[in-house]
Length: 179
Image (cartoon, helix red, strand yellow):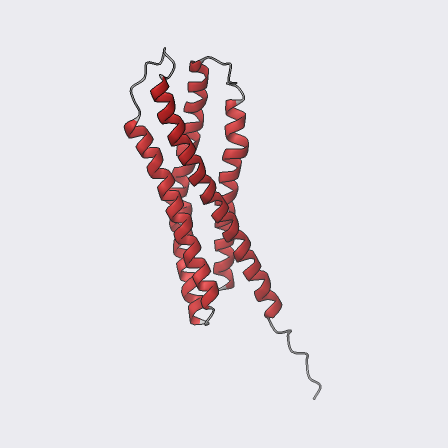
């Protein structure tokens, strides 16, 4: 069970770190080259680059991290229930449902944005209506992506604390007896 929990910890850490790097380093680095005074085309190019980066990261999460993490979290929760660690098992299950739900919700907003995006002439800036729609979807997506990342961070901390407490609760190895 400890090995499962360690694998869960590693996968959740990779996912959380990827989210943070994407938002804290990727987005600012890309959009820094298209400051607010840049032409709309420069900002659109930066948006397209970041959008592709986000799409690729989402695909990694969808195809690898989420299914593996969810499976291992459920298996670990089952093992914890078997050892009557109901609170820890509930933590694993509630967190994986929250993380997975936030991720899928965020992805659905992205699909909604693509499906409902008004046609745009690449030589013209957004109209006021197009900008308003974009800003609303962006704000919603940012909040949900942030929620996913915070839940991942809490999950990483919780699993790490659980593992460290488990180590402390292990009885010391018996000292050799002298016969």
